[in-house]
Length: 193
Image (cartoon, rainbow, N blue to C red; front, side):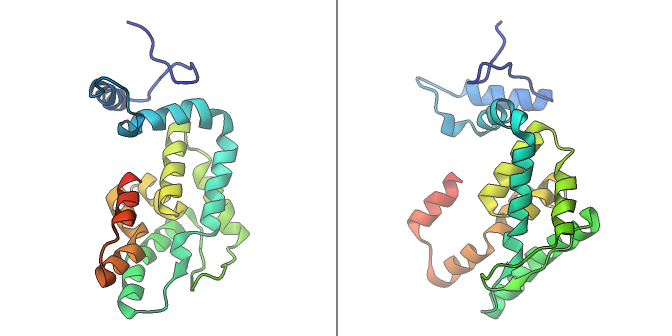
């Protein structure tokens, strides 16, 4: 019968019943102790309310900064199979960002910095600006986990499912696994993320 609160003592208000029920389910499965690692939606909501809401501009700027050195702009130049896989997964996202947001991003082979236009950065800033704290938090989390603001925007914009974006973000890693086998530590890190 009490109002649920965040760790920052702010009222836990959610934009939809479905999200509220999903958060409640995370709490329902807790047993003798509360394990935040098993409560990703609760962590996301708490972060949005306690942290992001008061720092929307900073969080949005961080996403725009990620876009300036986005994963999708750094391509392999060999082997051919990896080059084709990157093109197949990443080029449609770059085309969608250009069509949907008016932002054109330059891609290059290798890891040398690629300068993106000020116009592309402004367009991404415009795309991020209308997001509410919860969506901005989700976008930021996806961006940092995948190393790609453009993939995260494609999820928020309905162009990609979260699973498809995750696959696209790990195309290099998956290629290495297929070539050389799985590394247990890397797999465990990926599963935690």
